[in-house]
Amino acid sequence: MRVYFFFLFLFFATLSFAQVQRIEPMHWWVGMKNPKVQLLVYGENIAGYTVQTAYSGVTIEKVNKVENPNYLFLDLNIAEQTKAGQVKFEFNDGKGKKFTQAFDLKARRTDHLQLQGVNTSDFIYLIMPDRFANGNPKNDQVKGMNEMAVHRDSMYSRHGGDLEGVTQHLDYLQELGVTAIWLNPVLTNDQPRTSYHGYANTENYHVDPRFGGNEAYKKLIDESHKKGIKIIQDLVHNHVGTEHFTIKDMPMKDWVHQWPTYTKTNYREQVQMDPYAAAVDKTIMVDGWFDRHMPDMNQENPFVRNYITQSHIWWIEEAGIDGFRLDTYAYNDLEYMAEWAKAITAEYPKMTYFGETWVHGVPNQAFFTKGNKINQGIDTELQGVTDFQTYWSINDALNGKSGWMEGLTRMYNTLASDYLYEDATRNVVFLDNHDLSRYYSVIGEDFERYKSGIAWLLTTRGIPQFYYGTEILMKNFADPDGKVREDFPGGWQEDKVNKFVASGRTEQENEAFNFVKTLANYRKNNPVLQTGKLMQYIPENDIYVYFRYNEDKTVMIIMNNQKEDKTLDLARFSQRLDGFTSGINILSQEKVDNLTSIVIPQQKTLVIELKK
Image (cartoon, rainbow, N blue to C red; front, side):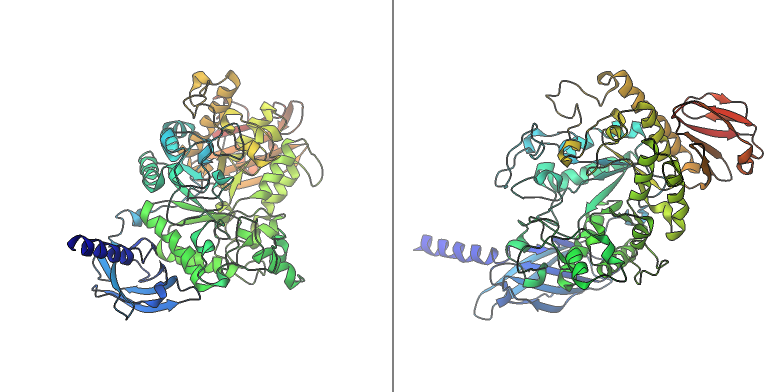
């Protein structure tokens, strides 16, 4: 009989314990500037319970019941002087069933006030974790996940790269001159197919265990910080994966945008600013799904807003990340994005973030940025964007286009339109990324053009971003995009060649690596290329000249886009050359003795520090 009662007790105890399957956020902190937090409580028929707590300083202001009885949303107020500890929530169904659920309130990080953000002093290196390096083969497959296969010969399968692999190669990145790492999304993506890229997350508070989980993420961040390298987290506000628990069992019908039949976005950002746009076109753009396995979040729903925003605040405080990259920015509800930005900045004034704006035309790009300078009617509070306009202009130039509005002139004109931004220096400039054909292939594998583009990237205004492997001339076209997401050679134990070390690289690959290394480290050590002013001159005869300058230094950049050497008379540039008598070629270390004229070799870009 005693055994019977023991197992009966164990049954009811287990039943009570399992009543709450999740509380998100998983924990919170005392001393936050915003004393309010909304907890999502998930469990079978949890809405049938009342909730209370006696924890000093914690008030449950409201218990929100929604359409689905498996959810409760608790509005908490955490008083300023509340002490860290374990809050006990008491659940009672009024019919004799009751249980207690613990929730941790932690002390805040001691370093949050020193958060610097990512800025023009940085050189960002973009990594797709699954394709960079496999530091721990034991986590390649995790039982119970939807995608178990690991096939390095398939562009759609997982390859086994992880966060430990990134941590193991921090010295390589530091040598290259990298000061910030942008990782494609690392949150759990438990989708049945193509889960490697991370853009259909199924968890908001868990790093994918195949990447090493939360602890591996925090270790990477801590080790990066020790080496002066920042970490940028890639966020997706617009959608989640179909395997997310809030999609499989939605709190309410309008948790996502519902359509009578599957409706994909029209991918037309123009409707966001078009004064003549049809309402249906804008609705499809913003509310349509990005893809069938990516449900579109209803950001007009206040519970959805809280759920997304709080998870991002949680990661700043939990892991100490330094910046955010915001995926598919143009597809979001812009009023919500403005609210999100204010919430992040209110808690972390130095936090920085930039949005992906794969749009066409400088005005369209500027429309999404901070300020209301061009009659947007809304201030999104977005600090900066991925600068596709400069990307297309440098491609024009390097691929030999020339004309009144093309090639180098397009580069000039693009920067001449910077007046449309509140601060164009917060834009992120790049030559390729995980969605685009690799830079070396785009320019026809022309090594001189390759160096010319790198020189531009690391000397123009803004925050330069590099894609993993560009420094070793990795190549391919995005047809499909898996071709530009190949493994970094040497990141796996079985690799026959290791390009993380000089001995594993070809002579030309080492020349490319050292070219990037030289200029990136010069930029790192010279504020003139970080925060210095920019002055550009109208291109003439396919030669483009611009200067970066401050009170301490002046750097002259000359880009020759012609297929022949040219002698350039420097008299036209006297405004910036006044007082200087010589210079040093940063890349060759050769002295420039004559500042009246200079020979620029064909299709080369010179970077010259001027001397008095």
